[in-house]
Amino acid sequence: MSKYKEVYNDIKEKITNGTLKAREFLSSEAELARKYSYSKDTIRKALSMLELDGYIQKIKGKNSMVLENGRFKNSLSNLRTSKELNKIENIDITTNLVGLTIIKGIKKIMDIFEVSEDVSFYKISRNRVLDGEALEYETTYFDKRIVPFLDKDIVENSIYDYLEKKLHLKISHSRREIKFRYATEEEKKHMDLKDFNAVVVIESHTYLSNGTLFQYGVNSYRPDKFVFSTVAKR
Image (spheres, rainbow, N blue to C red):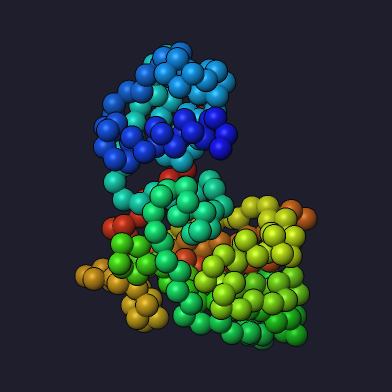
């Protein structure tokens, strides 16, 4: 593991387990460098990652301050799979396949991908369980010309792992929009919404390194369990 990731993981763990409290200031970069026996550049890189993921805020002229940490955090600045989050965040998200079909001729999907009606897509529906509750529901579409084969094992394990390691696709970035709306009947059926009748929705358009749109997806979340963070700088 990289040195800066060791520092990142250690400080993040102290924040998530409450050892470091919200609005508490971290030690200075020089003090952290002495504590971890690493260079200041390593410490700065770790702090930059913590800030990017919404755990701390760097304050000019002062040390970094710990931010509020309550619900499960998912950074909008990173394109991470559930499998990667399990490892990074030391949690246990289980992915369950609800539906895997091949479709074509759906006008909305054709318009999004700007293709004709003869192009086929994989339509995948999944829910994700965290701490015994189904808190996320996903419907996603893959252009079958780019992703010619998917099955239950791939979908429940890691689609991106398969795309990058087996198909050698270079995934670049995702354009995301956050929306709030009433839950659909499908979401109510496959999510543990309790008394909530609304969901937080992230709509994503994901591209390869050559600029080709290969995936469109809608992820719905129970609003009391997730925080979606990013960093805006002036």
